[in-house]
Image (cartoon, rainbow, N blue to C red; front, side, top):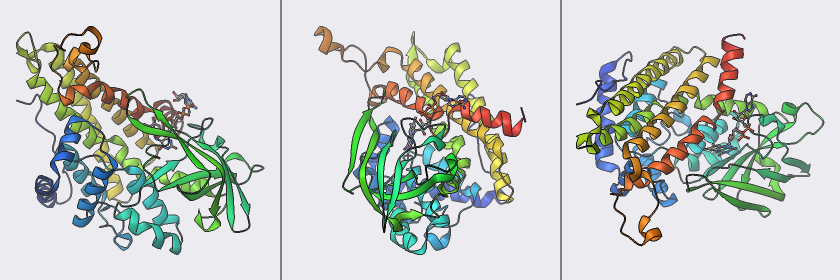
Length: 406
Ligand SMILES: Cc1cc2nc3c(=O)[nH]c(=O)nc-3n(C[C@H](O)[C@H](O)[C@H](O)COP(=O)(O)OP(=O)(O)OC[C@H]3O[C@@H](n4cnc5c(N)ncnc54)[C@H](O)[C@@H]3O)c2cc1C
């Protein structure tokens, strides 16, 4: 029995349409989501590239890989509410999270700022999920202060010569292309000398150094550029005006930053543990410490969702979203960590990923399921949610300065 009745999101102008749409998404997932992908997602195991590409192809065939893109760019022109409902159904019915860098970042950037040749060359491949992209923004000395970036691009005839390095580049080892912020004018004020370049990862002079995170999974890389020749045609927008492109890319993502669906996915995982795990023979859901924490997080999630809906409604009315949307990122990312922490506490020692048999030569006495084996890696992975896309401190600065006027 749930502590609090599950939250129904749909408060749209025509809730019947959305209710029908929810059922359609659930039926699609129950018929089309491959078992191996469903199992990996349930257990919190990262998908391999072939699995991701297979899932992209299934969604593309249904027309649901980039439904939020405009129709003439290969999307369906869904509004913010329909998209929120879709994301929620995908998360709560076993579908993996999609790669935001491809579908929410570089795609929309090219739709808005790309020239005709760039749109023709890249959008169909991104929209079908066949071309993998990574994001080259952060550098060893430029993270929160992104405008301090120093990767240099010097114009030579019909190409740029790029030198420098990018860091924390997620899934660069899978990527066919990288979009990069590069410095094209060292004399100008920091933000005025930056350009936005598209770079083929197979170009000579690019090398990768994998960085293994505390979670143990491979995902991060440092990307080095040594005299990399990039055709000048790969410049997006105007030279030295890349900052505007970079900033707009963050805007496209803003409503997703609450991660309501992803938080619900985690809530359901923890709810299941609450019933399957026992303490002194009693399901955790009946133990006061667990019940209290679960209820607190569930209420936080309801508050987050109510707030997210306020912004979605604003977007539906065509009103500006404003800087206060930073509160969604702040609260949504913190909540993801709190669910993962409760997940680990619910499993207790079974979440420790060491093989006792290997150390003391005795059989491991703890029951280890796929879910418990990934509990700690997921807990550590969630640490990144309050850093990536603007750290919590940066979000608080935005709220303090731009919303509260402090
Ligand atoms: C999971 C994950 C995936 C990522 N993927 C990518 C990717 O694909 N591509 C990419 O380009 N980057 C990626 N990043 C990098 C990410 O954008 C940076 O980590 C982030 O911008 C913070 O920069 P930094 O790590 O250099 O930390 P810093 O900016 O050095 O910050 C260090 C600490 O100081 C605090 N701080 C900084 N400035 C201020 C301030 N003005 N006031 C108060 N406190 C401040 C920060 O909050 C933080 O606690 C990823 C990061 C993570 C965690």
